[in-house]
Image (cartoon, rainbow, N blue to C red; front, side, top):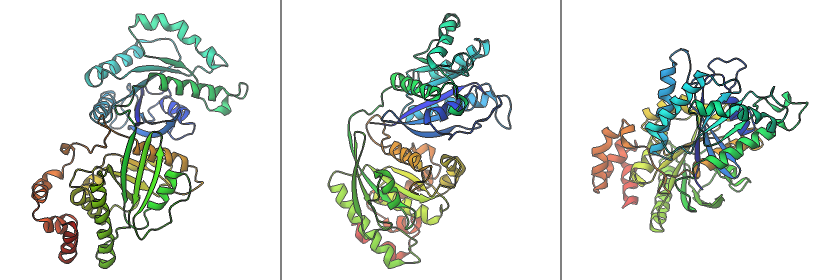
Length: 442
């Protein structure tokens, strides 16, 4: 089972963000009562729908009038860039085109043609479906709202607008439908069924067994993350040795090794060396037993430092030799209104430290927190995200500016030379510590 990508597009004010909230069953996306531009950037929302994991991509309105630096041309480029990026990695599995349930207009046709033009350039295979919103005044039931499609189908055909599927709904919250209880739920189930029926299958559909090594500093929440994934308290709040945890996510069997916390070597050289030696032995044993599928790097939302960079380089460049992908889990986000908002705010900072990733999840590990189940969806969606070969994949090197500076050093290291330079310059270890780490790696 692999995570699928669902893109939601349309004009401004048609209810794209309200549709996201309907699908999720909770108010995660910001909405507004007016028809102005609300979504100013592409936002991602992890979701579990009918036993499968998805990323919902909420996009700005394609007809956006100038709003700061946002223009119609800009929003179209953003959508095309998103589809291009997804096609190069995990794929785009469904595009939902959202319309208001009014008469068919030339603007609606123009929006449709823009979508089809982008898909023709980037992702001709992705199905395009229609979700018609704002039909609460038309009928008190979801079946009655379907009459909009019957009344307008010939006009859609005459305008050359063809869809792989459709649904006619309201996105107003349940409290707005007191005379017709259950209407909101009926509309939610209708959209879920549309997604199930019309989404492309994931590129990797075979059952997967993955080996994951979880690492990070002491206190970042590694044990809490294990408890979050498994849905119960099975890991202690701290660990002095690597611990193995086995669990299933759908058809994916995950073996995860929780490692000792890696703190700054300057503050505790002996403790750092003991931790690194244990991790090196674990990595060697896993490589001998079939390999590591993923390094899962756990970091606190307020701790992106030189130590974060050093730990990343130790695992990705030294232990994994740039052959094992690294994914990031950002913890302690319970105070964020929308946890995923952390990522666009800090993505440039991560790039500054040379930290690239095969994916990310923004979570809280606080049990009984309102965002706890959402956090579980986020980490499960990450752990089931593969490319067409059933592997996790790092971004192409061309996307990482710092790779040019490190290319010569990496090639030298892979030839078995100058590892001390890589450990001292790349991982910021002093010479004595680097020598002992190098000895363990032999």
